[in-house]
Image (tube, rainbow, N blue to C red; front, top):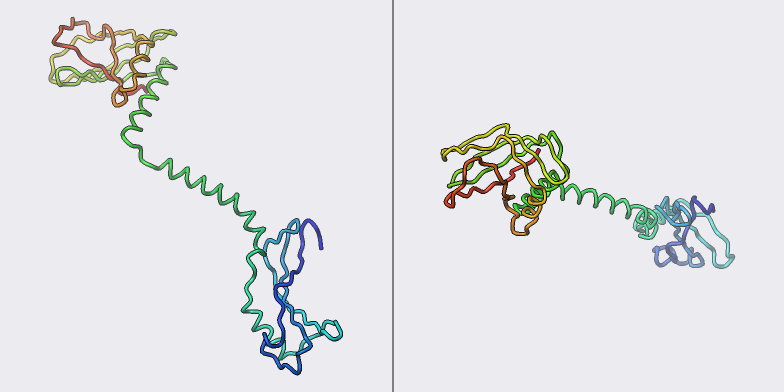
Length: 234
């Protein structure tokens, strides 16, 4: 028997003539042993190969051959004997880490495909905006929504320059609603620290409201105080 891999046989059960409904006079001195041959790796059984019988004469202590009639009866009995669970132990040990890996892969797919809640959506949106402000680029475009007097204006500003402390934006496009037109500044400078202080406020999850000085060239009275929202940075 090879140690690293190979086959070996293990006795499963022992029967006498009564267990097999054989002629007592003819087989009373016989012991019937059924073995299972398994394939192993490092002596750990991976799967069964076959079952076979060994017949021992208790008087002479010799192993004896069978005739056709006895072989038929033993074969019928052998068909009813199931392979033991332990004969597959190597396969089970081998498959456990594979199953864990598959479960992790499938679990990851279900997690990816799981629809986001509104809260998760807005948190992810806010994190993306903060990350873009942290790492500005000249090809970034700011989509800004202006809330005023029950109406909204939509502005598109392009990043034309930036420093460690500020980001300079240039107005590229504006969509005005029914509300009175405001004279929006063509170029504005945003303080990164001021944005971070506002965006990192815990209660500002659903909307990214922030102040931008000099966004409007018109003077703002006490009755007119617009709010600005960064819808996206792309």
